[in-house]
Length: 261
Image (cartoon, rainbow, N blue to C red; front, side, top):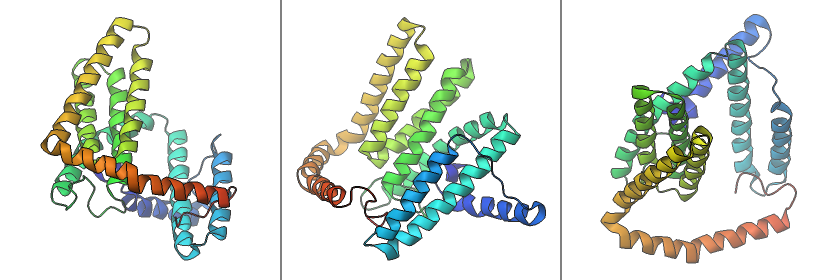
């Protein structure tokens, strides 16, 4: 499960694809269950195909689009079918996802320490530190959500899983993933403790102190270098990326320029 928690879809896709092929041969239909999300996702798929056709980077965009659509259909259809057939599997899947976060985080941190830029990532996975951070913060949030519903010792287990996964997120140094984690954690905490304002206040204080301590521990060894790099990134590369992106949107407001960019 650590591979799945790290977003290593290359492990699960062949297994699910093989299961769908076997079911198609033996029963004449694939693993699929329609949900209220089916139509919006289908519309997004059509826009993605049209955007790929209009892309100036079609040789790159075609492969990316095919893999994205195939993986999306296989994963979404298989899990929707599974949860319809066995609703009780939902809790088991969430627990496995949360438990897979800590080993994925540890592997990512070790791999990052051995890499030139020192950012955590999952080795041999088709993504870099930012993709790793995006998937590992979801594992941390799943564990945090389970902690709010658990009691006594089990609650500490899920809190530990969430904190270890968060350590991998911080080591990946992804600003957007960290912002997503903060927003998700704030929502889960408010939802779980909104009827108990005093306890909610203690949770906010404790969570804030933990985040400050973890960020400080990650930043203190080379704080000056990191701050300088962040300022240079914001003042040079980041602003240029935003200007180019705004120009691309203005030139192609409907279909975009495809996933090749």
